[in-house]
Structures are given as C-alpha cells and as structure tokens.
Image 1 (cartoon, helix red, strand yellow):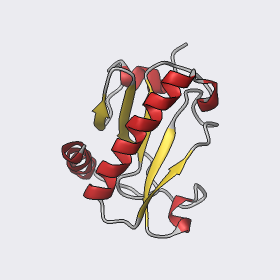
Image 2: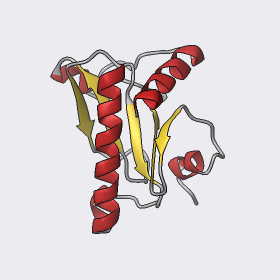
Image 3: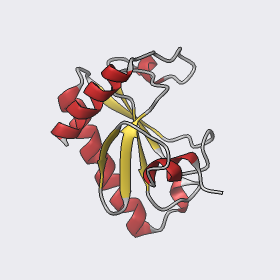
Length: 130
C-alpha cells in the first residue's frame, strides 16, 4: 500500500507544494513546529533514508539543500534545522525546520496552527525563492 507521502507526490492527497524535480518532492508539514516547517521526500518510496541507493541519496541531499536555502531566504530564522527520524511515516523524509533556537526543533513542542491562507502564502514564498 502506498505511503501517505507517495499519495501526496502522486497528487492523490493535496499539499502545499514547495518544489519538485524528477526524483524529489518538497511540501509544507501540516503539523509544523514553526512557520515554514517542510518535508523533503524522494519520489521513490523507500522506508529508511539510508537504504536509498547512493545516486538517489545524493540527489535528495542536493535537492534538500536547495529547499533549505529557499526557506532561509523566505522565513526569518537563524538556521534551518534538518531532522531525520522516519518513525511516523514509512517513507524516507527530511524535516526542514526554520529555527532560532535548538528548542525550535524539538518534536515534543506543541505544533503551531496556521490557516489555509497562511500555508498558501508560506509555500508560495518558499517556492519563489527556490
């Protein structure tokens, strides 16, 4: 059965898309820790990031760097934290979290609530900077 991320990539589930290329896809997290919290996934469904073949892994890292740079240009923050956990969805993914403090990237923090308009505006800003 396809993961929720595969369904997002296929357009079966809506998302706030930031960017995509032939191999990778980036979109806003719908349960963000901070404004601009994004997810980057390989289009190829694989459960564990470090099980990707070398070429796919390198492509994902290059793409993730570009997304992180676009986030940094678009969202006021000191850093863009990168977090790889992968327990919640069985599809390799990287969290990119705009952060001003280390605590901004703690998953035990309460998630923020944004309106559809805010999600759309944030996604458009990041996409334009990509």
